[in-house]
Length: 472
Image (cartoon, rainbow, N blue to C red; front, side):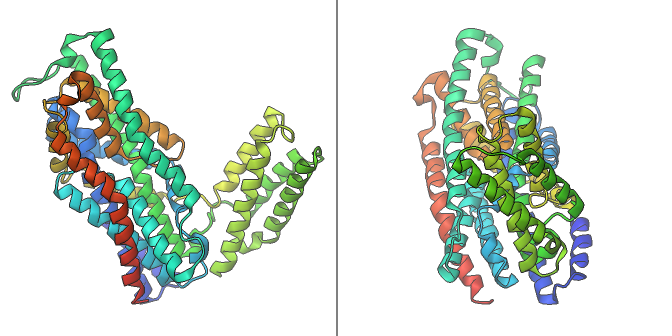
């Protein structure tokens, strides 16, 4: 990880950053690494607690195993969630302001997130890194608006992400209850409900394989979802500091962009219909013409000019997506498939992450996974319920968590691994013995932390932005 950082930072010094900015840039990169590292050991317990407390794996094996799959999850999980995170911040406004303002925003977000994550970890409270980061982004965005006006927070995207974060633990609780009832009343496999006693009381082979598989899936999907948040934050830093290099993907040639725009034109050529349809086609033609006109700005060193092209291309992609869903304009499956491919190719110009960014975040999360896991694991395994986890409860909660997180990643929505799995365990406990089976004291502490996470992270990030702003 340090080797990757040492090879990257000197290179950036060659592309126009002054020494003070290079130092701030390095601090921002290190802050992202720290955030993802803390995220690793804060959230790892969600994946390993069940296999450890059901004696399916020893901690010495479970922790590195989870770390490997977290690493692989980030590396293969795509960037849809990362781009969703990036859209939360006022990127348009940042591009018109000095680089130091962007540094204030990023550092406020990261330090607020790290502070709350470390605090809840120290107290052994399972708390959402996702909620913390989203709250920090909102707080820093509001402080940004206070100073510079405009839209400091993309409230539409915040609402979409917030709904995902709120619904996921409710879904986790409900599905875990249903699955547990199914196992109890339909499957009725007695060995599933055994509570391990003593160090050598290990589950039968089939159940052990099930528990290890669910642990693996939760670890992988945690990486594919939570890891992408670090990728999004790192891309925010790169775009803010080095827009000429990272605001657009230079691996996609101008010729390729022109070819894709020509494909879209060939599909929509001669399309007529209602007045509304005609207006959409006119808007499309205008957007195509404007994007072609600004295409040469893609390789410009002026951040305002290159960002002008980025905005034009994003506008064109939105128009094509809108037209593609209109059956009165595009009613052929072949034409829809062509436009889908065009939007994918054009989006890759502005929605991308270099392989070294993904690798750096993957390593940070994977290494963090192997450290500091025990505090949260004890709460997950021993304190949510009034009884020790049995095999069915462990497997049920992780099956629900893995499927919920996996689906959310596929739709590009960030969810809280902590909230989903903790809620899943609570649901499995209720299904086993009613609400009396839950530890009310622990649940009150967890609930209080969940309620406080957003307001505390919003206030903390806002105050940090204001503090850092004094030195710009």
